[in-house]
Amino acid sequence: MPDALSMSQIEDLEDRRYRAMVDGDVEVLDELLSDDVIYTHSNASTDSKAAYLERLRSGDLVYHSLEHTTDQVVVRPGVVVIGGTMTGSIHMHGVAKTLNSRVVTVWVAEDGRWRLAAFGPTPVP
Image (cartoon, rainbow, N blue to C red; front, top):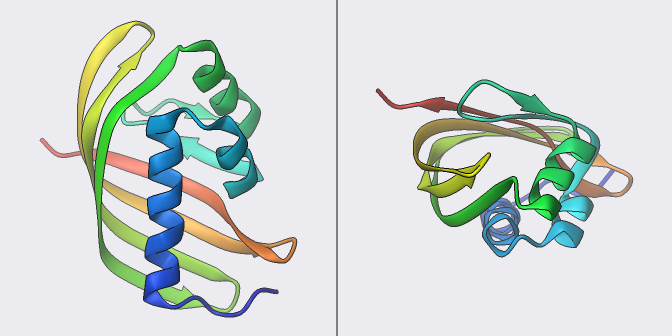
């Protein structure tokens, strides 16, 4: 199991993931996402890792800009849970959408590194 994460390492992981989303960098996301990730979108649909990466490859999902905060962090052996916010603009299924959500992100120690196990946004009314 990798060592416990410091706050700067947690923020680095999150920054790397969000940057890869905007850049459409499927290779980096493939590395960061657990093979059995539960990826929930703000419209309540969910994707497996393969489906999420295919959406990015095909252009069905395009992130134009994303901003995020890390407001709360719970660290346990092998697990980091993050509560924060995400705002930005995307195209999904060819439709422009603005994101403004509270998010929960779960990272787990897996195969000697930290990988995203779950992501869940809740749109802010």
